[in-house]
View 1 (cartoon, helix red, strand yellow):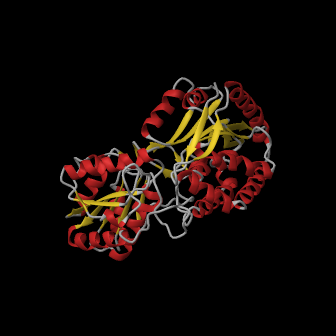
View 2 (view 1 turned 45 degrees about the horizontal axis):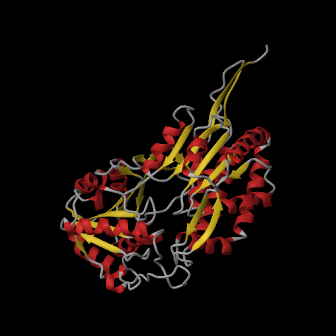
View 3 (view 1 turned 90 degrees about the vertical axis):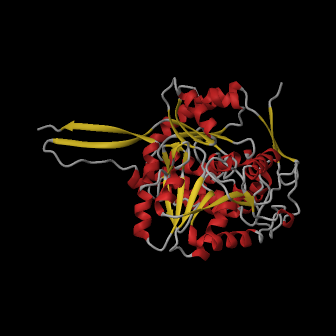
Length: 463
């Protein structure tokens, strides 16, 4: 019996893509060819690898319009915003290729007479990349391009929701002339994905997804000792100090909460506001939220599309309802968003106050357009509440005093600290999380360290 995966578009509930899962024999061929191809690819001079991958980026960007449209149909992002994913892909890919020479160069310790000593960065082998649907290119590019630049082979398994993204990668690499077997994609069932990760020929796994998925990765690789980088969930907080530019904070954090319909691991979900500013801040967020246009992602005027599927919308509705039952207050008039209704993937944004840390709305991940706002009376209280979470991906501080923000940032249990911005990845900085948000890092020079291993050369020279 053929195993078929379907992409149900959140736009209209139609089947947008159908793909057959590959069979075990095809998985075996992919692994075998990846191992063989990687050996030759690792011997290809870095300059040539970078030049080829640069051509692939050029080819990918050349299809930007088609790619953006596919993103909208597959996962529901408004067409007014989808092209930004291609721009972000290009920024990250080109930066990682730009720094490859210095990041992958040898580490040479202090000179020692009659000895030549160095530490080289060598590829791990075959890297499996498991990519999600919410930012289907921005998450995958973090691993795919630097893994290949470092001399690894890559097997990409993309989400069932966004299979065309894997195929677009392959199309770009083929256009650039990447040798056969160096990059491959596989449409896999969950069980076959687990078997792939447990194969001894997989040297490293780059996984982006749920906490449960991260645990499954570690279980699958436990017997092979393959390393794994895990980017998991988030419940990211922001703190608006009394000295913040309130207008800027309102605009930035509202966008940080509702961009991509709130379906971002580093989206803003918890906002803590200095008590004297609380009422004005809340009023500003509510007014701005009421200006959002919920509708078809194909409409250029839409800036809030559906969430990925009806079940995801229902989960957010249930989470909000539970918080209200516990005393939270909804501030958004949902009648302004006529397309939002039960049984639909179209979900009105929501702002909640009168919340506390006993609520699931605060404790659990919320992958949708809903945000909570609480007043705080000191920096110490803000830090305590921001850290009171199982997650630790990013945290944002809004303040006019960067020295105080730096000191507060040192106290936050998080992978990234922002000042006066949020929900953004700078490829020059490592992307990493703590606690249930994961482990390991991508991007920056640090990202290359995760995709290579050190190999020491200790030569006693002839005399």
